[in-house]
Length: 208
Ligand code: GRF
Image 1 (spheres, protein in one colour):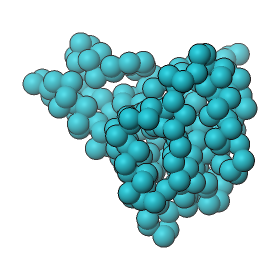
Image 2 (cartoon, rainbow, N blue to C red):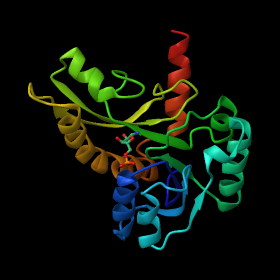
Image 3 (cartoon, protein in one colour):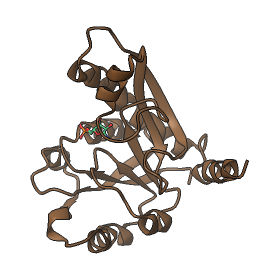
Image 4 (cartoon, rainbow, N blue to C red):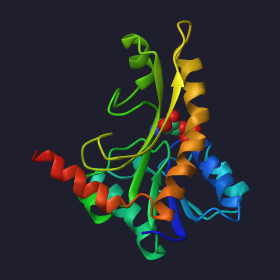
């Protein structure tokens, strides 16, 4: 998949990672462009970053579909004609089905605000503080059917301080997310990370 990448960025909310990717794409050396932004909520404030940047954007509102299958069919309709190389989940608050992931195998990445495999799932910052970890961070990883378990592409660390709250920790991690996401796209585009090789290694390790 190396070379200049055509991205679809999927959001559900604030869109600060989308904004970081938009900024990165403004650099003429950055090996990707955003072809479309899709939001699963009509009221996602992140959509404003897409319109301000003049990017094509669409709303595929999860609430309008009775089940995940219908929602994913609509998502696929928004994406499939567009020569998308890589789908970037950026605060996209829905778990994708095995079938959807298989249809885009090796072409969906996600950002998660912890050092995976630690603290998968919702509210990782609370879980970090409860565990008294001394470091946290963020992970960009390939999406596989098991949530937050796909091969790691980029991680960035931050310290955790004794007086941290979820908010202070989240803010420190978010700064690193905005560096990590463009970095992950750059590594894939540059060929340094080959998603299908990572997936092969991942499934091989299932048998070891
Ligand atoms: C980020 O912390 C991301 O890691 C998580 O959801 C949050 C989305 O933030 N998956 P934003 O919408 O990109 O500002």
